[in-house]
Length: 111
Length: 113
Image (cartoon, rainbow over all chains, first blue to last red; front, side, top):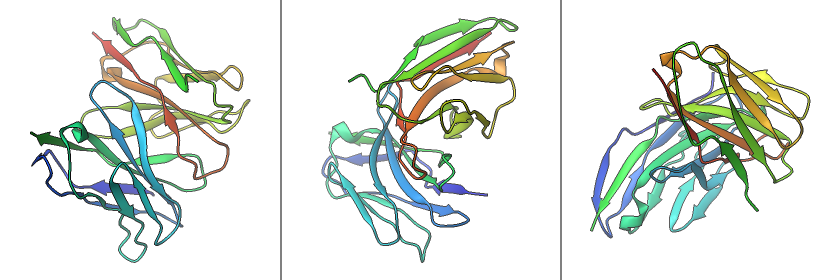
């Protein structure tokens, strides 16, 4: 079946540090890939997406590149802020309307 | 534009009680979903509705029923609540094309004692 594995947290960083959250996937076919962010007490918000190999999704300074050869979609940000503290979820979907999520990575950024 | 709305935001039930979680979207999306979120497990799909008039089981459907009332509304019912159903429930919707990113509601935090 389809599955997503992301690095375990929690991750604690200082402001302006570089952030990487690893995500790898297993899928039968060519999925669309997403990163969602969840701020405390809120629902999930779509952060970025990529729908085919070598696509790069980007938003709010975050980037992720769809790597078919390594089945990965790692999330990166060059300089994090306190406001980036949240839980980040990697997810995939094939053309069957169902989204498979990773377990989530909690990121805390200290001033 | 409200997006996806859910009611209630919080609920406490006793074991064996029933309740319905309501969800509505105003984005004219065809597909709607119910997920539950538990610590360390990400989100798991309970039921989904690919289009008005259809519903299908997801990964963890036992103990739940759903109704796609119309294109806008998709409700989740717990007939006889159990402590294992203590969770945060999220409704989501997406465009009909497979591969579209779902938009999520704010969630309902349910506790079953």
